[in-house]
Every structure is written in structure tokens, then in C-alpha cells.
Image (cartoon, rainbow, N blue to C red; front, top):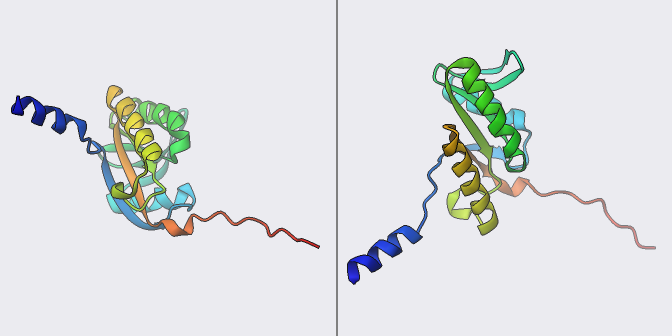
Length: 147
């Protein structure tokens, strides 16, 4: 009975199957900042034009689409297209809002798990980009004047 219990406990704990990178960027930074930093990191070209689109980052091995989590559907389709058009491994790089995987909350973690499942089912590699400055993602609200 003990071996079955250990097996159950081991399968209940999920560690993200995705790869991740952390950059010294604010989580609210423009997508182009993330694209450029990823291109520098992997020595890739940015905005490579192909028929039907522009690849965010193209390396000798990867065709990468960079997206925020709420646009993952679009990003997955683009990564598939770019992989087929270039004969390279398609990658969907998701810009996270949390500082790292340990800081992901339930809803964010579940969304990344869903994205990873869909990427895996479509032979697309998933990469999560974590900001080193998530505190800069504070939306500033216009002051309310009370008279």
C-alpha cells in the first residue's frame, strides 16, 4: 500500500514542463523589448519577414513568436506557421507577469499549464519569459478629484 501512496503523491505535484528565462525587464514592458532581449540572448534576427507574417525572433534552430499570456491563441498559430515556413522548431515565448515560477499564482499557473499542453500537442516548444522587475507593472490610475 505504501508504494501506491508514494506514486499518487508524486503524480499530484506538477513542475512546469516549460523552459524559462529571466530578463532584467519590467513585466509591463512592450513586447518589442522582450523580443529584442530574447534575440540578443540567442543571437537571432528580429522581425524576419516571410510570406504571411513576420517572425519575432529567428535563429538557426528556432522560429519564435513572443506574446503576452492573454494572446497565446494567436501566438500558437503564428508559431505553427513560422515553424512550417522555415523548417525550424516553432517556439511560443510567453511573457509572464510574475518574477519567477515560484511566484506564479493559481490562475496564472493553470493558464501556463494549458498553454504548455497545447504547445506540446502541436510540437511547439514553450518558453516562459520572466521579468526581473515585476513591480513596474503597476497600472497608474488617473487621480480622482473631490470637491
